[in-house]
View 1 (spheres, rainbow, N blue to C red):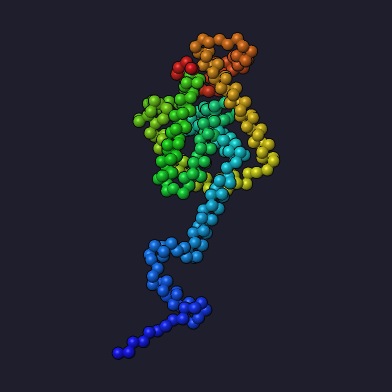
View 2 (view 1 turned 120 degrees about the horizontal axis):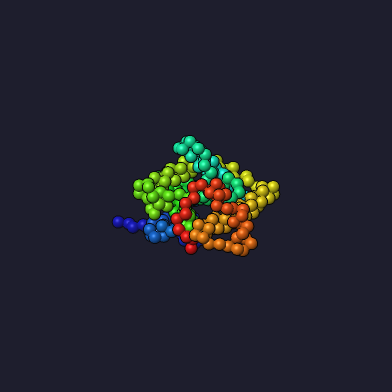
Amino acid sequence: MEHRTQRIDRRPGAAGHDVAASAAFATTATPAVAATRPASAPALAGEGRRIARMATAARAAWSGVSYQALVLLFMGGSVLGFLLEGVWWVVRYGRWESHSATVWGPFCTIYGVGVVAVYLLHLLVRRRPPIARFVWFALAGSVVEYVTSLLQEHLLGLSTWDYSCAAWNLDGRISLSMTLLWGLLGTLCSVAVCPALSRALAHVRGRAVTVVCVALTLFMAVDCGVSGMAMARWSDRQDGVADASPVGVMLDEAFDDATMARLFPNVKFVRSAS
């Protein structure tokens, strides 16, 4: 039988050289080599677009975080908290009671801190399912309440709320019912309020807004400082501690026991400040 051998001219540029070389590589390429081949161009382009969309969404969400925005959130939350506490007392007890935390102005500052915390936490957990958001907001609200209550007691010797009579409470500072309430309110705000609020705060810019926010910051710093000193003197007076310094005398005259009891009717002295 006659055997014929097909010869292939392997000189570069010769007919059949490129086709044969490609076929030989295709049949001998190992899986490891194939695995190192780059992904297809459409897949890379799609992944790039997805990452770009995520980056754009993140920038849009965090664009609402600025000094001006945080100041306005704090101030708005403080006033809103003061109004909500007063309305709650009207509904529950039939009378208005001031729950301001400062000697000047209608500011319940723990609500201001809470609003800022809710807004920032929303930006961190906004992509999580509602049940996860609920857990985060419940924990955050309870931590804020517990830490604030602890500081009030050990720094000023007083308390402005007490959950000792509530079921499942911890040292009277937090309770299960309030923890669940913080989780519910935080989740509702995250779903229904914070997205629109974030878009609005992204436009809070300008020199006039900055000047107003600086003025509010300075005022609140003085207000909170004087309020803290007045409360400390009020607490000391309950223990018979005198202060003959010019500042102590001024505080005793401007913010005597009757004035402080009128401004802060919900305060209870629990121990001597340490």
